Length: 211
Image 1 (cartoon, rainbow, N blue to C red):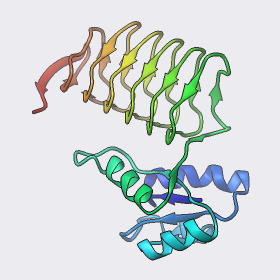
Image 2 (tube, rainbow, N blue to C red):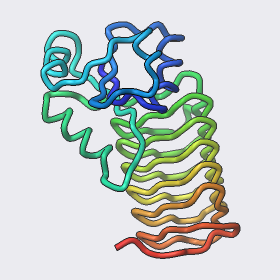
Image 3 (cartoon, rainbow, N blue to C red):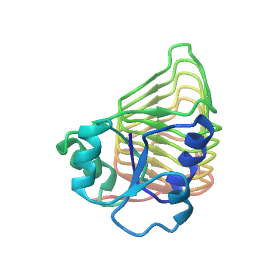
Image 4 (tube, rainbow, N blue to C red):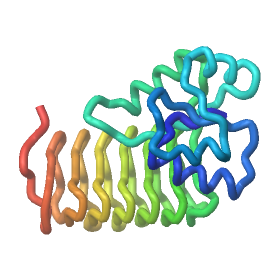
């Protein structure tokens, strides 16, 4: 298994992997990591040749462990590793509380530890759900979304593809958030949000729309 990324998210995932005693796992980064202690527990690779050798000789599976950015870096990295022959797999932390009733996750989604997910939740492809997030019953989350730490989605919230919900934001029940939306940290969303909106505040207000 290759863990793509060796930044802050990777350190959180690393704690799980050590506890679970994962073997034959390496981390990948092309830049010097700020967290050199990762190498105390797992090898770090950096070149396409090393990736190809790992896929051929160990496992073709990889976990995407990087956050969203303005350049769609997560999507580009996933495409790059698939082009090298990799299989983008999900990681759902066993240290989170995930209801077994009607919940589902798309391929490539990562759920970190201490997350609570209630019954009937549907999560799309290649999403990232960070520590201590709480997702209420019946929520639907689209593809390529990111939920920051301590986000709260109350019951039956819908989040469109490629949207970002910042740390500690609260989304009220039955709210619909459009595609490509950014919700700032700490915002409280009480109204439906249109596609491409960027919202701030308590209650959240649209500040501008992305081009």
